[in-house]
Length: 438
Image: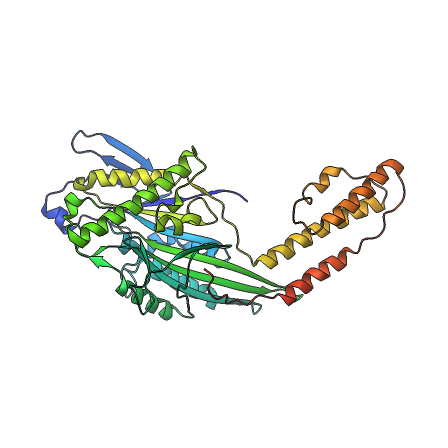
């Protein structure tokens, strides 16, 4: 399974009204052709250069951002991969605009509503009558290190993180079945209305929580022999709250408490990124925050991940921009191991069928009186392998052949084994909707 690095995109927003009124000067130059960012310190004219997978300037339209970043990832999720897109950066730099934008405006809508369009289009344009899809979604926020279900009637209810065979999940989370773009838009709007926001000196509608909108795409494909293969892709669309400096946001009371929790969780995220990149320790501090636990599989795990770093062009925000760009540079060195998520029984059936095929090839060689290299058995001999008894028998027969150079082994009915596996699958056939799983 080939490793795949986290893809990192940098997007610079335009100057805002406050920066214009304060006479702020530009400190960032983006080169979209070279995918590079030049950061200049106005105090000493020191220049820092950074290179990323993609770099976008202030005038880049929302559609182009989507096509260059999310489009291919969404197709992979429909094929059964896990995917994550998360927006990172200082408060007021355009993370929520990039991820959500204005869903009612075709030009201004962001990544999340555009994924809805693409996913529904993929399903509606499917011409294979043997391929069936199940589409579901959930929407949560992490506010002051507490998890809330934004699709719940009781938004203030706290939810617990649990760990199971499929990794970290949220117990009793509402997961809604959806069939149309309109239904997905409606759930997103409901959740966004329930999200915690508040005004600060840096942002009139500052996100006070981290939000994750998750789309689950399960696909059932039945082949000509009636065998069913189920894949389960999951797409996490993450809008992080922005990092803040109290001296700039002038936060007090609840806003200050929120900022403290936000900065602690973002610091935990930075520590996870650093630990993964440095490689100096086997312990990765995922458990230091709810955010890093939920993103555990996205950073160093079984996920195709895209990080979008939002930055300001203003010299007033030089230090924060430098910090964001450094985090982005480290994140692009993280290696994940994405693979298609299959129903465990389907994966077992495929593995056993491949092993039986190889065993039959070895039997054919022995039937012809050809001794076999015992190293050929190493890939089969492992704890829990149902064919170990068969392998032992083959080894004994191989030893006999090596000594006698003649004779035929007793026949082994490998077809029966394969038939039994198919019968096992039919008896234990899974349904597409698995309640409570995430």
